[in-house]
Length: 502
View (cartoon, rainbow, N blue to C red):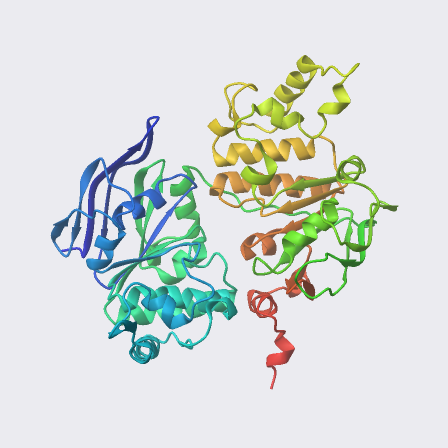
């Protein structure tokens, strides 16, 4: 008998959006079970139902053979179900022990029993190999240690079924391996885990079985030992997904973007940044998020104050130019957050496509709406944006098609240098493949590309050179052939391989 069964789970949101469509899933006792699917496939909704954050319209949940109605997360916790969210739910100014025991503190009269709390947290951390100082303040911990605190929160409440939602999104490769070791130890101690990720190599490494969702339905369940990333990708998107096809670099590249002694005026140490991007080159930027990547983007675009140094594009200094003039000189951006920074979702597709250059169509202060809409139709065809009309609201588009709108707008002006920040975040495998093809096409055309990504697979597949940012500075530079997960992961944690040498 399976430890967990979800039978015929159905969930429809207002407006007729069918998030889960008759989903049936089983998880064995002591198993690490993978849950994968493209963006919007229904993974998060299904886990929210299991954790009591959402209620199904139809279906049944059975745990150890017992049919359950899970009214809320508190009820889930009482049943031994715990969840580590992608964005940690911690209070930074509290200690590790205070975060772990919050709401369930041992009492000593009217007050929390600090000694008992610390003792229990220390015992749990030693038992499960989650070494962390109970007295440390959470704000002083690395993201890897913060994740350990989240796991300890579940164990403190005696959780036996653990849901981990994109647990490696902000971890270095070494921290990922540490997480895997912890999960294996938890399973050996009698826990069961559901592991949600879009990184297929993680599914192959840590999961015994994986269930694949597509458009709210289960389309397959595989044993990882008998499957492959290619098969799982095919199930996720419904067709074969090809790897990016690179061509040799340009024989005689020229400098396209030269950054000299750039300081971003951020809270990080103001170590000047120096780097060059050549024509037909993709320079990858690795690093745990929050190490100065966003500040670098803002400085390059001219939307950040307190910046010093020089930025030279095709021989012209941009440092005294505003953001619009920098774009006119050939600088383009795929932003980190397409919904917050790259698009106006209530506005129509053509309006978003025209938002960077609309002023050029004005005659006597009157916009040429027909011309702008016609240009939008051309871009929709060129970039295969799946939309009923150029007048459709961007809010009606899928994540992949919304990203295509951003890419179409940024590439329409044939940029000299493109900053691509997290260009495939939240996209399914097929949409990510499209983005990769566009970047490689630009590379072949001689465009210089700064690729900032939290996905090491993406960086290693596309980059000609890589730099690693740590605490606002460039800690290391790697040629493509010398870049390894081990070396990049150490640099992302602030260390270099030579420092570990005996």
